[in-house]
Length: 251
Length: 222
Image 1 (cartoon, rainbow over the protein chains, first blue to last red):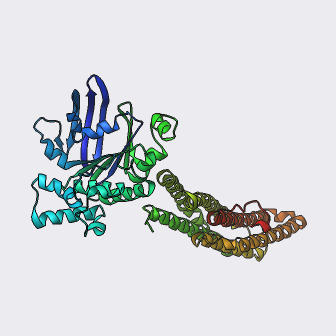
Image 2: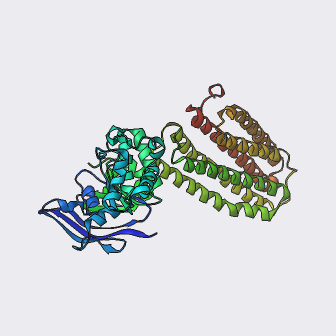
Image 3: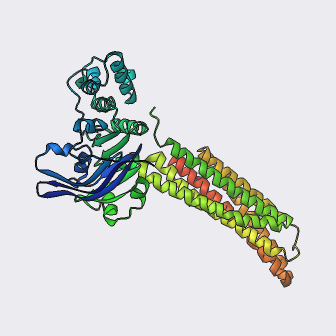
């Protein structure tokens, strides 16, 4: 199993507040890794460390090492645009641009000057196919993205990422705005996408982590308490704190 | 209709139960054949193969626990998985009883047979048919055959009583026959217990299919 991300001794500070403490973890390629834990435990902060989204927040500081494909991402020489192209992110609420379906997906490849003309159209088509929107919208690509259902918008946001050919997809509570049937569809999509991408999902919904992920990490008070195969975490966790959390005795 | 992501895992669980049922049925068949033919080698094979049945029980239980934790099954799925766990317990016990029969076979080898075996093979035949039927009801999700299986169990009880009475009579008349009669008495008891476990399986299938509890109920309730 090939490692995609290697994190060693990661500390993260918001000013004087230490939000992550000595986090070390390996994320494997073509797997879905779920991060669970109570609110404020550091799981979203950790996720945002992986594409340096925290850099935009003033007064933050990172210590320790994060390597993606063997290369340290916290070096000052790292090009953040390239990093975020390689490590894309899907957010809680779908955030399509107020543009057409086509323009949403074409946006990334245009900005990165990856393609134009027929080649660009081909990228849009294959990206929409990957998120299973193509068949429904191939004749309505100029429809405004904001008119789609929330689930379709979330799919579109994933297509927008896929279009710039990322390696890693970070998902921060991607289903929290969706109803149960839509959640199942997005989970099916995640299983489908992991053949091509490494997926890391932060979720408040433990059952979702159990259903969809290969490995699960449990965060508590900025510490990665336990990281293991999902089967193990949900049937026989090693740490008492994990057991208490997943059985509803904590938080 | 949405294709559910865990359908394949449920189907795999179904296949494993079927495999375990076939293994146990084969063990019981061999143990009875070995009794009839006084075949030492075959009895030893039955004893050795029990390990495979035990391993399969552990594998199925582990799969069930993992499925419950990961897919949070509801209604028919939940009944299917919990029933699978109960059925493996009954099947494993049946496998152990086949081993018990094989062990008694080995004891009997050192002594001449007390009497020609007539009712014991009949009882064994019922046990075999009951296992076949009960596994089939599970695989086909057919809860309608539990009454038929119950009738077979009654038949098995009567045969066991018949064998017991006959052996008691022989032992009473000739106390030196006791060492040869007791293993046969126990074998009849083991075969009857196998029938009880097969009945449990059939009753669990009624719960799985119809969400109706028929255990510990008079026959009219089934």
